[in-house]
Image 1 (tube, rainbow, N blue to C red):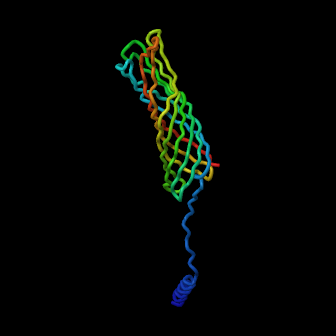
Image 2: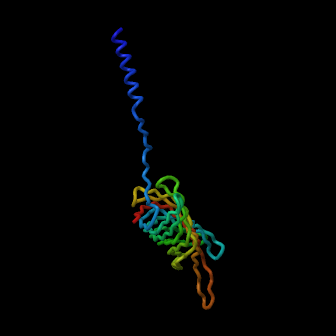
Image 3: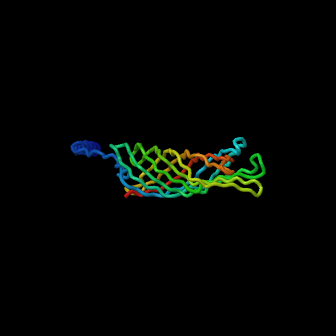
Length: 226
């Protein structure tokens, strides 16, 4: 009985001492938030591009060459963080492209081929920082493409290589890995003009064929912020 009373007294004494100790508040885990979304940056990217390649011959014979291929290059720009969550920026990029598509015998004996060999654009960017270090953004501006359009009938071939231009728009996500490096995924759509094939007969120009270029590009990139 004496042993039990002694044990109970010890427990009460320990509880009293613990009650007098100061309570240390527990700190919430620290989430790193970098100033990655401000200032000048450069990067590289790569992905795929595709185009319906729709067109017609003599205004009646329709075709879809459906060019598809690799797209990759460099990008650079400047970001300005506005308040805690908003971003405004300007970006330019340049890409090599291997988009190529051919249709055989579209209503006649021969073939039609359309290609895109390079892409470039200058775009504004506007975004919202969803959570620390993750940016969702839209982008819009003007784009250019180096295209090739060829029509072959037997041993006769007609071709043109215009530089097309038009509006470009898209969007993506960008994640800051640390203060300097970040990853992005994005989609861009180039609303380009038509490539025309014409035959000159004296002072008369006869429209032979045309192919439209509305190019979609999906790509991933790595950027370095200075």
